[in-house]
Length: 452
Image: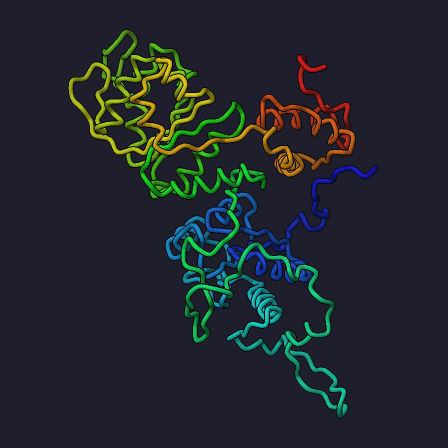
């Protein structure tokens, strides 16, 4: 039986590959351009929106980014400005063929323009930039035997049909909406926030199961608001990743995301850790300290495991949530702080509020908008994708390994009480147990001492 292979680039392409990131909400456009660039020996990654493009650029450092003229999640102008500041050496080319302002011209610009021209031609679209003379080749005319100059795009008519033709996720950019002028050519655009039948998955959340896509949908809906968010889900299901995505997509993303685990700090110190303290406020307080809440001013405060917070401290937190003012331990003055609160818990907080083990008034303040992260068992169909993701992550720090059939069967049959975090640890353990072998076998999959 053939092993489940995690894609591994050939050695010679890993030395210095020509890499490009194609960013567009139009799936068919991405697929066509990817096929053409791959034929030109480019390594291609795809992004459905600005947030995913940012994450891909950070992880893969492409030489060029081809970006559509509309982003479904971010303002294009603001995105380009921030992107140029973060990645000044990346060649940014718009899908219209123009160059992003102040973007450095890459050495392969003409090749990218040629690929986009061919991509547009396969979609029977008009391209408004004349081909470079170096790309025009003399072709023998079958009628009179004379030579003429032929546009490379005409070659597409004699090539085999595109195997990706017919695949699309909902309507494309050229089928609905109002026309957007790009140069002299009208291009149909969907209104922002409308016209897409598919849900765009957040780059932080690996998985295409409906329950995972619902998490992405809810995060995108609430991210740019100041509404408090409560994230509920079992341990190891990715609640912290959801909090990071909420902050990254919010208007506060330039300000800090400050996290505190309410279960990891002793009760006696948690108040001072949250609200800060003055010098001499308690034994050992030799100097004053700014609390986590104040440190997050202008940004996002992530209260992990909020269900473990003592009832007495919940009352003080409630006052801050209501009026935005805090009082440091040992201080009589109040401080005004502007933060967006995101809380997370693995416990049924609503039931705890009913039973009196959690303040109901604080619960209703925090749970204005709920996001639930599903257990891994609820999206088991994503296991192969998750395994591939984690194996590729580990491949960045050492030799890339793969999982064979027997190991995959063992992984698929397991119940995963620890969810995605447990899966990551099991694969890391298996990679260590495999030693120098490039393949993980069933004997390398160890779930721990409690599993027979």
